[in-house]
Length: 437
Ligand code: GCO
View 1 (tube, helix red, strand yellow):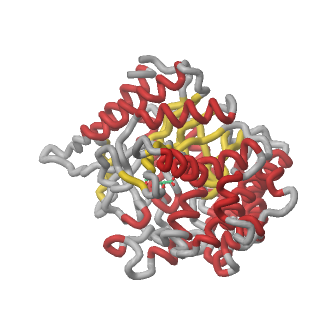
View 2 (cartoon, helix red, strand yellow):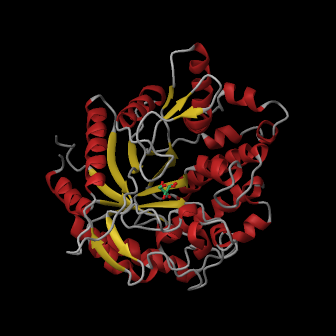
View 3 (cartoon, helix red, strand yellow):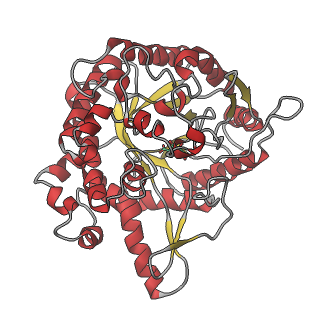
């Protein structure tokens, strides 16, 4: 099974999950600093203060990437490193770190792919209303502009907002991610402002005169009816609206899905918050779509969800490689042949080094093999998929789960910060070398 020549095999991380160095070189606080330091929010009271200490060990981590043969590395830029309180003159020391990282990638022939926002909103902006405040989208465009000017000559691909849906659902509906609210009406206004931020960043890149490509990073969930009833079919359609079309239709069709708007109602903060011209901004043409696929969703007639497949250590994740094929082909069918990159796919495994020091994550190898095969089949059926980033390069801070779940190709011994290539990393290196399975 061979992939197209030049296929971009890669791995992904995000700033708060790996960097540590929470107080260094002028970095300000983000909502995740606040949230993780709030007792009871994170498993075992873990925080990202040190994480995988990547801020100090990035050179060694770059060497690991080279040893793996990665062709692409997707990372995120920490907004509070660039603007400690979310506005004003950029912090040169923060920019310098990413400059060193990007230069180091080029020296090793690895293409950088930079995400502008992976959830670490400067706390000062949260104090001013966060994503409920429309002004935050404007602040984001200014921050993006500063980053484009500092790094744009060396970064070929930009991703705007990582998984807006997760901020909406986990941050504002369920409350188990920062900022930890439970306010559904606010949540969908937040969705709009995150989308607006995305569109304004796309425009800022175009206005900069730089040649880089840019797109959104969306976690998409194929939704299936849990049974054959008409009720389940109808509930699945609306569920798909909330999970997928709310973000895809706005960006690629310039309109929010009517069924979701109707379901929110005319008095909702979402419907009242959309101003003339907003959808024009949100649907500013993008160069690519980044898809993150982890799990399918099965919907019953009453709109609740059920599981059909075994889960990983993450109880929300059912292992279903066909879902990868379904979501990729569906996006191409419904939204046209925009180039696609997979920016996340992976699973947590119970990774423990054996007596010989090796980490035998056989489950990750078979998971990745099956998902690569599904992606390959989608390419064969016409999906313009150009790259694939495994989540994650390193074990890291898995948000509310702290350090308990290990998602990396590379094991991190947090006490010593020693890195060990897991069996899956060795296997992946061979996949990349052969450009296939
Ligand atoms: C994301 C993801 C990552 C997670 C991964 C495993 O939004 O990009 O949430 O940050 O660590 O998806 O849950």
